[in-house]
Amino acid sequence: MEALSKPFPDAQKTYRAYRDNNSESLRFLRLIEIDWPCSTAIIIRLCEYLTDAVRINDNPVIFRAINYGLSLYSKSLGEADPVRLSEFIRGVIDSVGRDLENTAIYDVATNSVWSPLGNTRLSEWLKENERLTRVSELSITKSQSSAEDIAQRIFENVLDDSQRTIVSEELTWLNEASGSL
Image (cartoon, rainbow, N blue to C red; front, side):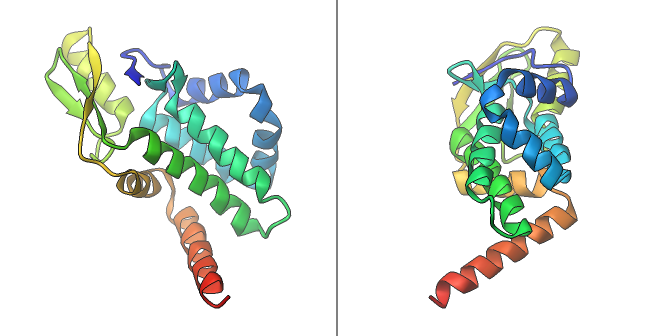
């Protein structure tokens, strides 16, 4: 895992880069944009929150998360509306949680650390560090953060109230249905 100090300058450009570089997922991305237009806003807010700076094998964690979310979404086609959106969101936040588990980003120049469990978006932290030093030297460091806690933080910070309600209601219904089987 690595962290780049110069991610795409804004969430829209990150989103466009995803669309331009992930042709295998483009069909399902277009489908979910039609099916759930709010999915675009969710992806853009995720791009604002996380940026493309954190990478695994030169692949942005955010792109991996969108791909996984779209994979679960594609498997849920034919299900009820809220199930499809919930599967997409679950895939995105679970993927980010797994990829960033026990991880933080350390900036040597400012001696500061960004954690996925903090209250600051990575994009804001990077901009502030650049403002302070002009040059950042980032490294990945260990932290005490579980995948579940990170997924919960992403859920709280990336989704709006109505999206959280849809997903929460769907998860409650699924848990009740599986308990009665």
